[in-house]
Length: 417
Image (cartoon, rainbow, N blue to C red; front, side, top):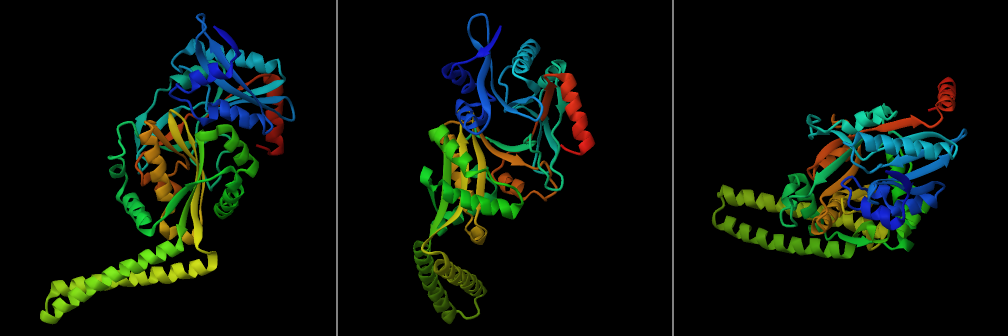
């Protein structure tokens, strides 16, 4: 076996077909990171026949003392092969040591447990990778649920994934919960439309994302990140807006009121002939209630049209597409327009795209790992039916053990993390 730098073609051919491949380990990600302050290299292991058997997008950046080397979402290899795990680890350590490395951190795309919607463990995954990493000298930090809104700055922790492998475009909608089915039906009735953004529209996406991030108490990605990602990933990244045209919406609501008016007139005529008929009375009450709802919608939408103009952005989201999975990343919802259910339509559209392209997994990405009802984002994702997966966590191996221990001691003494 030989540890070496790989060409883009060598690397991509392996990564795009590996079951654990993700946007974090692509050649596109290398371009983004290389432009944003990281040194990023396509490394791998080649066997005696010249075949690539392991890859890692090896990223590094300087610390106060030495350099951090990190692999996010990788490496990609057979975790059952203890010899290969140790060989790649040892060779990466030697490579980092020659370049002032202080510590090597791996965050593999590996899961330990699966949970149902109530937080019950439904599956335990093989721990071979964890055992082999520890045997290779790595310190192991398992994933933990988010406490008091404090997300880990290093590890994702938990993610929500839907398996699409057995679904077709025809059977996909029935795989959602009734809540999601209802919401998507309403978006079509409201006339919500989706649109893929151009590069020039990214500042607008950023503006909306900032507002949502501030409301939820976290920091959004920079515009520079969105722009560099857009250019690097090309067709493998999508930024989507869900929009509503108030003129079309109001016209449709008025049309529905006309239809209801005809139905109400018919029932009233029947009641004139049979004034004590309970069934007709119940129908009339239901139709009048429906009409009141449409009257309220028209009044609300008219006020919003006057305030915001003819067309408004209801929600938006960013997605990565890989042969292995579609990844739902950063998103926003304009709070005033929640009742139009736009985020549901965005997810439905991307899920249909994934099934049409025969992509086996749909990764809704991060959740807190808490099932007590406090995670509203989890509840939304659960409406599409999937499972929460616990990621393996963080694996750390000092490149220069003595220097690393000194740094860790100083951090502890000064209270720094």
